[in-house]
Image 1 (cartoon, rainbow, N blue to C red):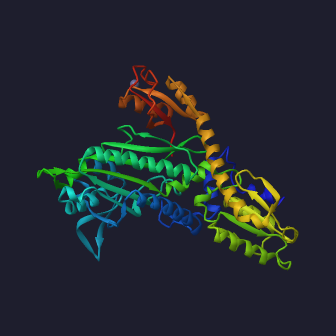
Image 2: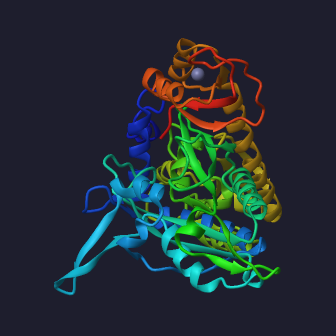
Image 3: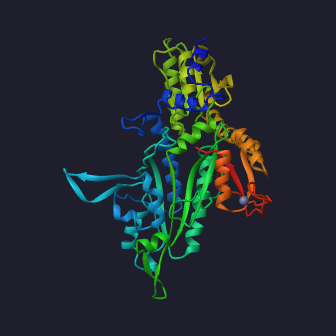
Length: 476
Ligand code: ZN
């Protein structure tokens, strides 16, 4: 069978998940490798997913009152050294421009790894009075972090992201915004990516370089490993002091502002691939799928078939659905395989007999269910309802998997067994860095986020009284 041959081109998802991932991202033409090691080319099919992510996320930022801006790619080296923790954290990853215009530069320039420093500098210029606050900006851009081991979407030296940066008059407001943006990300993950996440505070070891506190959302991938899918940071006055972000308060005194930042990146594409995909390839959540419905003509050379397919596509387009008619010369079976691998949520098959009977055959990518006899005249309603149902079902399936695979442990051996079995392990922790390091060394697992529900009595490592309950996992 053509189908079997096709499926065999992708490595086994259960026994070789890393190769499955590589096969899927390359064969579905989401990405290719760039000529410089560690870089990726995002191809049109992959970029269309990113555009849908951007569109959905950007609308949420604007609704929350955040404005977009753009800051330069090149940052004076001296900026990086102004915040001590920040420079230490990023030093191993920065790319530096030393020559330009045929001459050595007086001051080397850093290719932005993140924009806290340059935005801090500009905020210092723009903020004068309490009336200028809050200042809330976001930018959609690329960043560069020189990584040693790279994988498309998950870790590459250059990637695309958004970084939001705000300055407030008080710490309470900046902290509240840090939580609000975390909740915005969580809602986005649920409703747009159909992906359940755990959200919470990061440990000191895992926090952003220069932050007072970092919060993250973590998603469980098919293999039980965790993927950090977004972070928000409360900076206190660290960056405000380093960059002189000062304002005159309503009482006439000069004060430093409080800053926060937040970001998600093209990693989200990797996250949704590894959350929803199956042996046949991608399963794309409808809200970000470049094509939500593919129409495959059956016996397309027969009179009236292509016309009927195109007419149906026009109707679905008018209803706001992203639709494509595959009128290529390939056989219907080849087309089925191709679009299944590419993760298109719904396929409609339309042939002479369907058209004559006013019917259509509908296939669901996520469940592989196929049904004929759907009323062609009700196509808009049928497809819209089905896309909505697919979103709910994708979320429910991933959520059930995550809940099933969160296990408790009260010893290091238990924790190791848990992560070896592809689980997140919920365990107590005394708060000491030494114990966190020991967990990493013993089980190759890291503290992903602290659980708000803090009920584990003893530290999984030293057995002393626990200060926090932590989700430990192996992570991408
Ligand atoms: Zn301990």
